[in-house]
Image (cartoon, rainbow, N blue to C red; front, side):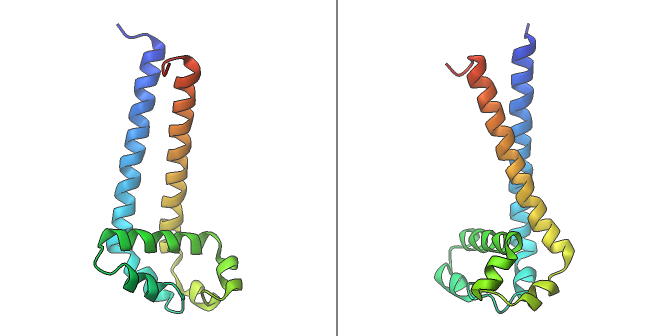
Length: 130
């Protein structure tokens, strides 16, 4: 029979695995169905064309790299505008639903990493990872 510590550990591991699967699914959904639409709004971004040509033929690696750059652009727009990497008017053209989808997925991923870290620390301090 399992004690409460083992049950909590198993449930925590299951939750972390489910979060990772959902996050991966969201990333692949955005990469394959929304990324081109997002990039069509930010045509003045200085990194879009070089990254597409540099990573041409790599498939999902190129898309993942571009999605990461778009996430950073939405997280720190003032930084990229100040550097001249993107036009502020173009950022306003991106629909809020797409920005929320990208940023929400990013925040969900951060929450998943925090949950995994908390689980690891719990198991470590509890002595189960000795």
